[in-house]
Image (cartoon, rainbow, N blue to C red):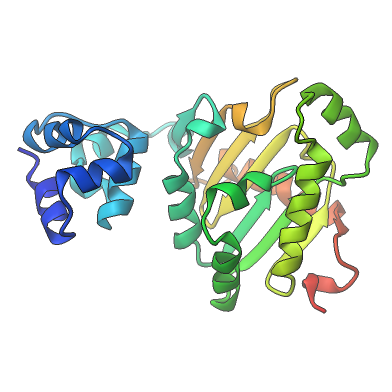
Amino acid sequence: MNEALRRAMAKAHMSDRELAARCDVDAKTVARWITQAGRIPHARHRWAVSEALGEQEGVLWPTAAKTAIKIGPDREVAEVFPYRSACPASLWRTLIANAQRELTFAGYTNYFLWLEQARFGSALRSKAASGCRIRFLVGDPDSDLTRSREEEEAVALTLSTRIRVTLSELEKVRGSVDARFSSGHAYLSVFRFDDDMIVTPLLTHKVGHDAPTLHLRRHQDDGLFDRFASHVEELWSRGRPVWKEPNGQA
C-alpha cells in the first residue's frame, strides 16, 4: 500500500476517479498506484498527481526520486521526452507557477503557450507584479528566415501567423513583459523558469510540438543549464525590441 499517496488524496479530498480524470488515466490505474506499493507511474503522471494533490513527487514516490539522482554531468537532465507534445502541460504550469525571479520564453513563435496554458496572460501579469522578470524572444514574421521555415514546415497555420498571434497576445500584457525579435533561436527553443529549463531542438521539416524535449535543472557551474542560458543571453543582447520603448513600457 502506498500510504503517502493515500494520505495525500484524503487530505485533498480527492477520489480515485477524480484523480484519474486529472491525470488522464483510468480509475483502476489510480487504484493500482495506491494498492501496489512498488508500482511507480510514468514521470508525466507523477507530475500530474503532484500538482493535483499539492504534494512533492519525492514524498509520494521516494524510490523514483532516489533512482533519478545522478552524480555525473548529466545530473542536470531531469526528464526527456521524444516530442514536446509529450511533455505534460502540468509540468509547464508548475514551472511557471513556481518561478519567482525569471521567466524567459525563447521559442520562435511561443504560440502554443496561449493554447495550452489557461489564463496565461493573467499568470504573466501576476508574476510580473510579484517582481518576476519576464522576457520573450520571437522570430520576425516578415523575415526571409521565417519564410524559409514556412516552406520547410508546409502547414496550414503558417509560422508568421503563429508569431503574429503571439505578438497580439504580448501587446495585451505590454508593461508586464519585455520582448525582442531574434533569428538565432530558429531551430532551438529554450524556456527558463528560475533554475529549471525546457529545451527543444527543432528537427528539419518538423513543427515545434514534434521536437525532442529536455527538462533541465541547474546543479553546477558551466553545465548544460548554464550553456543554454548563456546562449539565450547572447541572443537577447543582439535582439531587436518588439516595442520602441524599453522594457515594453508605454
